[in-house]
Amino acid sequence: MRVFSPKSFRHGSLPCEAVKWWGILVLAEVLLLARKDLRIERRAKVAVGQVAPLTLLIVVVFAFALDANAPLLEIGAGGLYWVAVLYGGTLLTQRAFEIETEGGNFDDFKMSPIKAQSLFLGKSLSLFIQICALELVLTPAILLLYDVQVAEWLLLIAAGVAGAVAFSVCGVLWGVMAAGLRVRSTLLPLLLIPVLAPVLLAGSRAFETALGIRADAGWSWTSLMFVIAAVHTVVGLAAFGFLLEES
Image 1 (cartoon, rainbow, N blue to C red):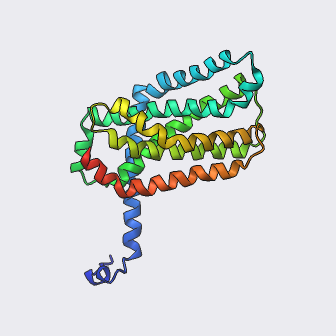
Image 2: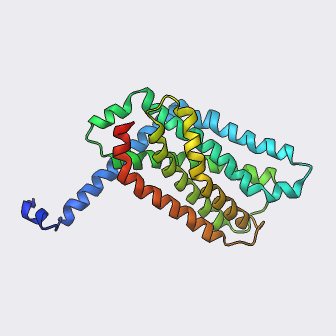
Image 3: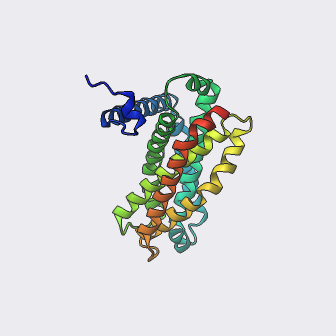
């Protein structure tokens, strides 16, 4: 077994083995935390029994309201899709933090050896999976009810993934800011929706291109969502520990 001398750390030459094992430890914690959240959700069935039907109802209501104006419904399909995702994702984010705050789990996390970065990535991963599941429900509903055809499947999938990634990391970062407040149920949407407005715009434009509604740079809009996700991921990894202590 190799022993790492203090001298090697003082000179900044951190051994590759230490980095590797640190990464493995973080990955294990991330998967454990994500699995914990998903297991709780599977038992509670909030996403399946409440959030998904409610977002589907939004899509159906718009379909009935604008049925007399089919061209308008087709043109607005991308935007209406992301409005439904935004609404459902906000509910899922609120649910993710209600579990932790009501059970006092954040206080336990503060005293545990689990890294704040692992908690940030773990909750982001579980929220990402739930939003992707929500998108899998909404996409066929939009295609059927709004009578639109997919022109670029790869762009449609990439935009959906990019939007889910951006939403999940933004939701966790801003969710922890509101977690310690009594008015978090109303404050979180006020914090989250303005931040996600660029994601809503980029996702709508990318979907319109994927559906053949708009001749636009759909991949550029998709790349923008990935950039937004990357920026919030870096900020979250750096600041989540401090925000957790203050919550």
